[in-house]
Image 1 (cartoon, rainbow, N blue to C red):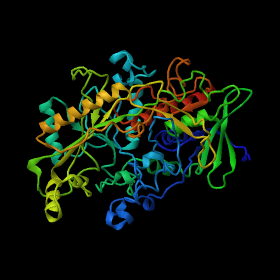
Image 2 (cartoon, rainbow, N blue to C red):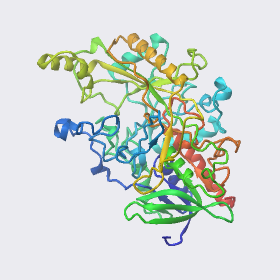
Image 3 (cartoon, rainbow, N blue to C red):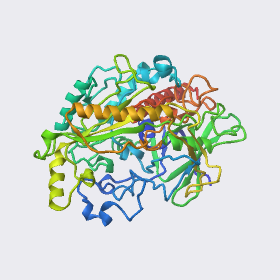
Image 4 (cartoon, rainbow, N blue to C red):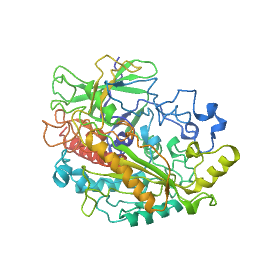
Amino acid sequence: MAQKKIVYDAIIVGSGAAGGVAAHVLVNQGLNVLLLEIGPKWDRNTQFHTEHSWPYEMPFRGLGKPGQYDGLWKVSAYTEHLYVHPYKEPYGRAPGTDFHWTRVHAVGGRTNTWARVSLRMSEWDMKPKSLQDGAGEDWPISYEELAPYYDKAEDLMGVFGTREGLAVTPDGNYHAPTPPPRCGEAHLIKGGKKAGIPVIPIRKAMLLKNRDTGAACHFCGDCDYGCQTASRFSTLDAIIPKLSGKKNFTLRTGAAVHRVLLDPKTGKARGVEFIDTKNRLTYEAHAKTVVIGAGAMASTRILLNSKTRHHENGLANASGALGHYLMDNFKAGFVSGFLPNLKAAQIFNDDGAGGGHVYIPRHTNIPGGRKIPVLRGWQYQPGSGSGAYPGYAKRVAGFGSALKKEVRELNPSRVSLAGFGECLPYFDNYCEIDPTGLKDKYGIPQLRFHAKWHDNELKMAELMYDTAEEILRAAGAEIAPYNRNVPPPPGDATHEVGTARMGDDPKTSVLNKFNQAHEVKNLFVVDGASFVSCPEKNCTLSIAAVSWRASEYLAEELRRGSL
């Protein structure tokens, strides 16, 4: 059934880092915008289980019934009401494939629970084929072209950091310096100097000063469960409240968009079709332009489901690249240890934002860095200090009071590294509409994934473990026993990108340099699907910058009558 015929200037699908930023730009440019979100709008004061819920206060001590959360590292008793449970709402995985697709269906998307690490890509990251090693493809834009939008995104998001002058991780527009390193992190900095590997202050989208969008962080440390004070950036807190009430902005929640509508005469997009998640009826919404920013996988799914007689393999897929070159950072080098001179030290709340205060940037295969026998490189995100739930206790020998004493003495001395490596783009890592007919609970055809790590990633993982041990030993740490497991499957880092990549050649790419579909000029894909490479950096800041740039271009083209 068709709703009342209103023709908006732009329809935006998705309200996270991509769609939310697009809404911010387009509404403030004066466009009449409809923002469609599949999930509800949460009240952060009641939705998030943060700060003060101890395991012993929850059924099954927060672990759930036996087997309830097996294999799910993000979904737990603390977060099951936030994430789409993959066992209850499954997606397809081809034989021999494992893939972790993390979905948050709510206004703000995954910005409600993200780790907040905000790193700029370098010129090397955007031109890897020509400036690095000949592998993959270059982005059709340069770092210089994207830098002004990094500035704008960092200002909006409230990113803190320090200017270090490292080409591998360009400096940004910071609202405050990073809090001082914790005791264990200070040891890591010294260890890094001994090993010849820089350890620098981290950069995060987190308020250290009060703003009109949120309060300064009070260091509760439960950022992964949401934020009741709006201290860490989310579009739910920082963007939507400022747009709500404007005459040229409409938010519709519970709208499961499943295809783009085309005008048969012009071949242009004329709107979208969506299912109301409450009444299960189908509606149309119409606009002069359509902006898809639902997250790389969800956006690609919409395009694949939008096939027509003239777009038999999915909308904007004449190149055959749609769905392909699926990338994600892979996780390895997870090594921890204990610093002898911090054992049994007094435990106190180190001032500073939740999570680590330092970061170890890529140091391999760059000018002045180490040369290694694989392509590209990785970063580490360290952790240190006392935790409310000392998970290492399960690996400490002993029983009773002696065990408790040992755990308490170890708690302040623990230090750890977590590595994130670059995945190369491979055509055979891809997603498609599930050929078995699998559908979601709204009857929309679901994705099936084909993805695995290749030799370069697996060889790099071993080097990541070696270097993690080297840094910890140089810092004076005693390495805790651990297993060198195969990296978790693609998707586990929740940095998945690349399935509708941009490029200058319509024969090998889906979008042009402004995130505009080659085949449908009033259709834009502004999220991580557009990425050409997946460097070791966390991707959210780059998604926001790319979306901002594309949205400014869209607004100008619409004013000129070119769309």
